[in-house]
Length: 253
Image: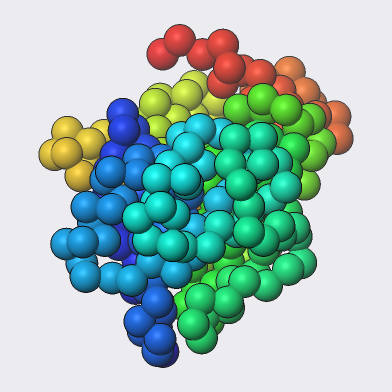
């Protein structure tokens, strides 16, 4: 039976995600950016929260764990690094499986933004929750990992089926599009950027995205073909990615 995903904005630019397994009626929240907002959405929907699925330890992803557990009794699942700011009931890593009722979430190692970052992939429904590893037209900053680690993580996500619906945790797409246009003048990107800017002017979200769309237009996934634009011609793919990421880190547009 299908998974229902409810997305809502919170904090300055985060998205909250609640996912409900239709067979059991059980729900999970993916990360806890804003405990109050998550609890209000659960109340409006009438959903029973069973799991908190953390992707990484940052406060805008795990900072609401304790308040939500106190209100719902939910079980906290996540990578070991989450214990830097929150208790964990179950530690998971790449290759593990997490069950929400009858929904199987495959845990995918996706370190780079943080060393222990993970993503959750529901193959049956074609849904991936990727935290701060992959964004629409972007990727997370390398606060802890290396370009090689992050490139490897992005390739794991890029290997998912093209029609996978990708829920990334922030509304950064307009900013990402402006940077992307500075390193890529391809028609697919130009067309997408126009759509992104128009959607944001209307106040509409640009999340979720798809794996196919990101492979076609995301400069971080396209780094090897953009290498000459960022001074990395002839370099290994992960170094080309690192050059694109470094260019984004100083971009002022």
